[in-house]
Structures are given as C-alpha cells and as structure tokens.
Length: 376
Image 1 (cartoon, rainbow, N blue to C red):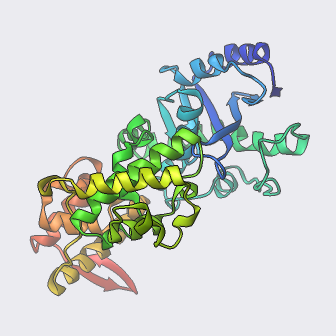
Image 2: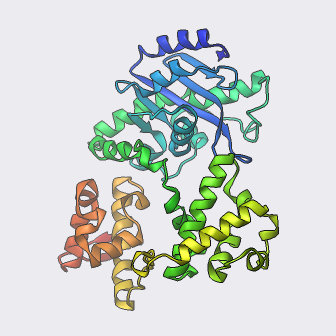
C-alpha cells in the first residue's frame, strides 16, 4: 500500500506495532545536499507492506514512534546508510536492529552480500534492477517504482526468521547480538566537525602542524556545508584543502594562487584564511598526532601470513567470513599488543584467538593434505 496522508500512516503504524518484527528500507538522495533527503520509507509487518511518502506527509511522528519502539526488532539489509538517513531525516534511532547482511557473514555467505543475492539464496527469487537509478524525489511515483521499492522489504521478515533459526542452531546468536548493538550507536552517525580531517584524502602526506590546519579547515568546510545543506566538495574539494594546508596562505592573495580556489566566494575565502590562521597558531603539543602504521619486519610479515592462513582455515570450517573475524591489521595487533586486539576476547577469541595463541606458542602447525591446508 502507498501511504501519502497522516491518517493512513497512523492506521498502518497501529497495525504494525502489534508485530514483533518489522522490515525497513529507505530511498533517499544526497547528490546535491549535505544531509540525505528522505524520499520513501518502506515497512513490512507480516503480510502488510507499506511505501510511506515522507515528502507528502509532513508529520511522521507515528512512524518515528514505531521505529523507536524498543520492543520491536527492525530488520534491515546493510543498515548503515538507512540508520543515518532516518536519524537525520526524522531524528529517530532505530533499536534494536537486525542486519541481514551482517548476519549472512556469520552463516557461510560472503561478508557484503547484496540484497538481491540474499533474496535469491534464501527465497529463490531474482529481483529486477530496472529502478536502481530512480529519482525518488519526483512525484507521482508509478506502480513499477512502488513495486520495486516494496520488494526491498517484502522478503526480509521470512529471511530474518530463517536466519534466527540458523543462528540459534549454530549457537551463534550471542556472537551476533553485540555486533548488531554497535550498529545502533548514534555516535556512528553523528560526527564531530573537528574530527572531519581524519577522513580527508591524502591526509597521510601532512605534518602534524599541517594536520592542525586541516582540522580547522575541514571543520569550517563541514559546518559551512551543513549550514547550506550542500555537498562538502561543493564548498572545497579534498585536493584544494590538502594544498591549502601545505602552503598555509595567510591572506586572500596567497590563497587565490592555489588552483581551484577561484570557485570559492570572497566571503568563504576570508573564512578559510581565518581557519588556516587558527590551525597555524595551534600550540605544538595540541597538534594532532600522526597515526601511521609501522611496517612490520620481514619476519613478522611471515608470521602474519601464517596466521592469516589459519584464519582462512577457521573461516572455511566455521562459515564465518574471514574479514568479519579479523583483518591483517588485527593479526598484527594480536602479535604486538594482544590486550588491545579484538581477537583476545569474545566470540573472536573463542573462534580463532585460541587457535592463534597455540600457533604462536608453537603448539600447532599447518600441513597440506590432498591439496588442502589442515592444522597439525
């Protein structure tokens, strides 16, 4: 059903609130804005599926209450962007959440499986891709668009039930729950403008002093983009910011000598120079520290290679995706500072950490039998 009035939304949300589980997906645009523009919210509750129009319905409070209900599990597929959009667009944090993409990585499927592949694997249905580039902000929406949108939640409740049964059967539900809880943390969505420099491309080429400037300049860009609701790159590109940090222009004339700054307005250019000055005046002990991984020795690299072979073996035997268990950086941390490694506690320790401990202690080894790696 397509809901375009508040009364329709209230009736559906009352119906959906009786369910224990609902499936949720969103359609949004952000190519020309800083904040994602919420264009459609799809919700499946049992046999009932609704495409909710947030453009035509000004008061979405019934939907917000439904999504915020702590007794109701919200099922998403690859929920990261959806949670951000719902928090920005409606001010609602959806908890508890079950992410079928994450759960799939615990159940023998690849870590970032697409929704279409998941539906085909669990339901034997091939979904069309004809509407994948739809402009969801344009009205009216035609029946084909609505069917495509509703398909994004149509199969999730059934998949959720099967996944839950598999996780219980494999005794992995206790592994999955903490991972799902982390997804709901609003801190993953709400970002401090003064930390935006950490996502600056090529920031690794900057000195500590230049990083202090980048911190101020990126915060200025973030706040300006948010205030005007424009993509941050429309305010200033990463390439321009890196060059500004390296040249440290103290006035407009020097700033304008940097290629790409001609697109910055006079007012913004003055604000940018002021941000540069603030960064340049930062006390040395308050400049950001440079976080660069020390390249391990050749001997340590060889140990990591051996550990990774064990990790892949554990992944193959357990059906849990290798990258979900640990990355090569995690393995290096396990060697250098075991107490900080995620492999030292929880389900990761039970699944792989114990075996890696024995490997490093020389208690187990690897061999090849019939073309396959096995533990000795």
